[in-house]
Length: 345
Image (tube, rainbow, N blue to C red; front, side, top):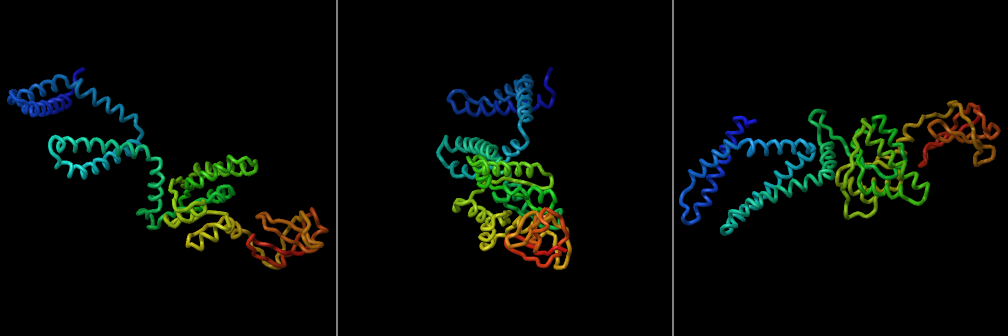
């Protein structure tokens, strides 16, 4: 089957130009004279007749190869090649002043080499640069919204192992991009590979939490390879990264909470959130409570509300393992949470 007319025209023009350029090279050889017209006509005839093999087959081969390349790889390759050509153009300016034949050959070599290296480097590192680009895009003002930016939320190892971040994320209250630094992921992996069975179980639970977060449509979870070299511990790296990217830290670590806030970093503590959403009881209210254990003082009984709040019942020991109505007498807020004192009704 012959080539179509556009392909024949393309082959005629392409190989006519090739014949002209070959003639220019041969003209520099003594005794050959001017072969411009002859070689151009020969090239045009060859291109018109053999367009099916010389133009159509390479075009189809290139089209098939492009179809097999993933879209992200193709985009990264085009961007990298374009950046490489830009660098080659800058380098070609001084190189062009070199004596022949270097001044004519080296610019072309630089263009090919830089575009190839740019494409290879960007395709090879797109997995590292992709989360960064998406994170930066998430943190930029959205023209379709009110102009507010989506904050970056850095996850600490403690909040991942704790597991409650999974339930909080499902509620839709985390209006930000959950970002897991690579050094936090490495620490979590070392915990999951620990020889201690309890520590190993906590690490594996943290990995399961990350897997659920990543597959959750309500939130966006990203992984970043940013690793501040001037910091050594995981807490220091988190604080430094939060300062550099204007991000907040999600944690349950009390010490990290205090240190980060002293350095001006916004901290979201899951423990403080849990205390804030607990039911509020005022002195005089009556609530049903099952007393499950003895208290520290003589005659005291202890029970727990559904949200985990501990209730100390004076003279409640005699109601052990029974559910009785108790009247709230005092509510204390401590660093460990809320503590309620009551007496049997």
